Amino acid sequence: MLAERAQDGDTSAFETLVLRHQGTVYRVALRTLGDREEAADAAQEALVTAWRRLPSLRDADRFRPWLLRIAARGALNAARARSPEHPLPEGAEFADPATGPAGRAVGSGLRQALDRALADLPPPQRICWILREMEGLAYEEIADVVDATPTAVRGRIHRARTRLVEALEPWR
Image (cartoon, rainbow, N blue to C red; front, side, top):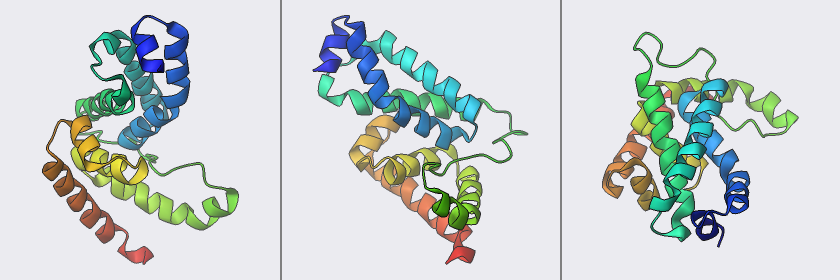
């Protein structure tokens, strides 16, 4: 297994893990922070942190959730470190930019509305919603990532969904 080989000091195994997971790490950071440069910095820092903390990984089968925990916590810390006057950059981006041209044309207004609605969510709700709805993690995995109980995660996601539904009501 790659994670075990990386723990044993195999740098090529860790490079393979980075290539496999860097997109997800960046997306989590981007959707949390809303700024490409900040997200790139946070993703890079998460991967460096993962390399340094690799010996502390207890279960190599749980590499992905472990890495996402590092990425999510780093992005949340960066979001919290912003001054209250600058909570999120103007034009923050959260939606998946990988849709085709037709999807972008049709959904650009909805995407902007979703971006604004996500930007208005408190960071703990935002990261839980992102990990569940956009990355497909289970409640237990999200709880592990954000260091909360599955019940707390369900509550955060419920509150996030409620706020998003209200914010996107004009698009129904």
